[in-house]
Length: 344
Ligand code: ASP
Image (cartoon, rainbow, N blue to C red; front, side, top):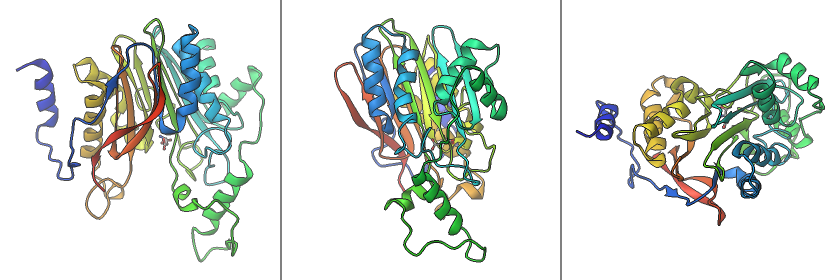
């Protein structure tokens, strides 16, 4: 048996998946002929910016960080940076990491308050310290030392969403919701919000880098750290193989070290598309505790993956699809559909 099919059947052994989406496993995926930038669906402006810089000869890491900075600074994206939804106490706490393929170096910050661009701070952790991860007050002091300006990250809109969440949590407490709350119409969607931007790039030298940045799960317990600042969970790059980034329920990526797994699958011959889907299957298989399952016994959460390999092949998959991702293949910058593994 070939090495690759051996690994595939070994991985699949004993696992049954009764809820497989009809159109199944293989999903989509594609190949770019030169530089490439892929990101979560909220990153179309990030992929545009990053590709522009890559075409001007910039390193993929410079490019993807500049790309996600646009989303970090956008008050209308409630899942990242400024305007992100806060923790349960109404305070925005940000997580981010960066990974540079050519040097296999990385930096991260977690539970960082009051700094708009955690990805820039993560990069400085990588370049200007001997450490990989700084958290909370230490991360903030480090950012201050590097001249970052502290600012209020909770926008009025995000505050109103948080307040409405708080006021409608429990009918018996002392907080009453407004009769006609002045909150966005899509409040119900935002209510349980997840979201993040993860962006991977291949530059003109064929080098790969990535970044993930987020405000994490809305209304989280203060101090909660998700997958986004954890190398191997919400991002992983191996310049000789490829890269993977993820969005969605971070706890599952922490327990499955999902992005590392995806890159290792590619190392063993899986295409980016196959690797993303195999990782999704692993997560679904491991979702056993009742709090993660709906009445049908399926996961009650979603996780999405974006991956590229050295050849410029790319793919994306999610627990539930269809999912979307942004891709600039050097010619066109647009949103593509990725495959879901299960049907709701
Ligand atoms: N992965 C992020 C986290 O768990 C949230 C998300 O992407 O929705 O913090």
